[in-house]
Length: 176
Image (cartoon, rainbow, N blue to C red; front, side, top):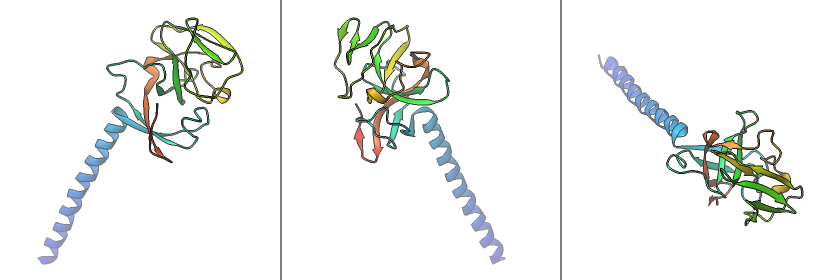
């Protein structure tokens, strides 16, 4: 009789722990798919700001009540295949005309401050950015596969996963 009670107690304990583990997995999946995502930076296109191999947190809720702003670092689906995840900086906003001349970025004919010291050497544009779309550039301007070179030059807002705000490895820092 004691042996049956012991087995019953162990099974009950396993069931209780299983419920806790299942609930924790469910909550973590919910958070990952709706609130935040973690990613590893696969390339050097954002170097100076984010190094290859860095681990970042993507805020999936950042644009629920707002829109991406110039300078935001965002994760999105590459517009030429709709599947590959990219990480770039928003440089051009809906309705603007963007072009690059002699290493300077122009928005609607005016030079804007850049977010990096990396220069680009090939002129681009002018490109008129459609409504609800954005023009993306990597911070490593001379080594970034970005809007300047894509077949589909613009990223739709619906393709943006979220705003990158934090690097947690190899160092902890806020990204701007």
